[in-house]
Length: 130
Image 1 (cartoon, one colour):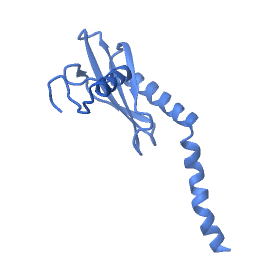
Image 2 (cartoon, one colour; image 1 turned 45 degrees about the vertical axis):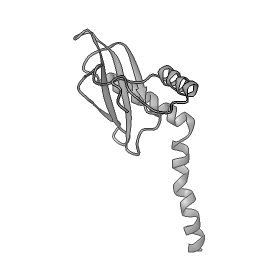
Image 3 (cartoon, rainbow, N blue to C red; image 1 turned 135 degrees about the vertical axis):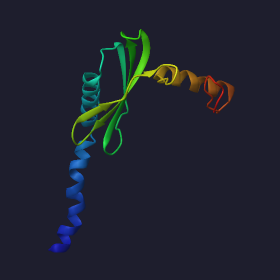
Image 4 (cartoon, rainbow, N blue to C red; image 1 turned 180 degrees about the vertical axis):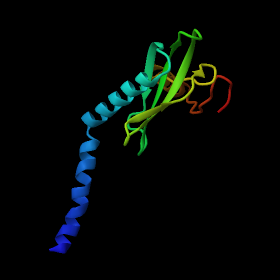
């Protein structure tokens, strides 16, 4: 009897994890991270772009929010860390565009196409550093 229970225990423990990682659950998670992070910004950015890491880490959701600062009139990015357990967020100070560039999907695709065309598989930034 005890052996059967011990064999079934891993299946019982894994059931909630399987539900939590369904596509709908991850979509809900990403929406919550985006909403919570935007609400916690110290200023309303003009045309903000929110980039949520799809699943985050084991404990945290991660997002970058990029947009035009009405205060400084420049592009800035905030980094946001979402505590999955507590459902709270912490936001970084604003980071100027010259110090952080968020790569958009279109930029990544263009770079991949260029590498495929040239056969160059190196990753080099604008400053020429790998």
